[in-house]
Length: 217
View 1 (cartoon, rainbow, N blue to C red):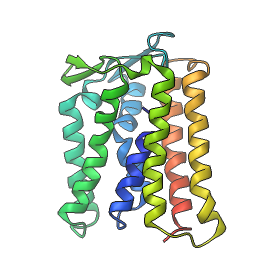
View 2 (view 1 turned 30 degrees about the horizontal axis):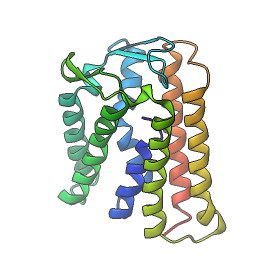
View 3 (view 1 turned 30 degrees about the vertical axis):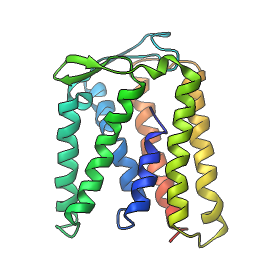
């Protein structure tokens, strides 16, 4: 899953207004942010195998540190502690826990779409329900999760400008276009290009979310 993860960001922001939306955008992609960095550093491994699933050409054959169940739980715990420390314990247990849940939601949603390449611990006992093998259904799930969360966010906030009123829905459409290119377009040119492209999207999407959020209260 890619843009569907951001539906959790919007839903969490609707439940707790003290957490900046851009923080939640990074939280739901935290596992993939570090996956991208670890791949570039040679710590985790990926290769391009067109057709390995109907939707995604990435063979994610070694990612025990970011996408194992144990790893995801540890990253979530780290996010909880970091958010409380960064806010100098100004963030309540509930608020920091919500950030941690946003981080862990990545693994849960990945479980639905991935082929069995998510280890439970280390690099063993790999699981995945394989929805990526059904491209149309997987794409519709991305749409439903993204716009379901965005609906909750828009309902819980109010626009202060015209950009604030229409910016988020337009942003959502742009994200879906990016998702469509990922699903239906050509594969990344190399195993190195894939994490670089991913990191660029994570940074840009978080920056746009921060910019648009300022137009809503």
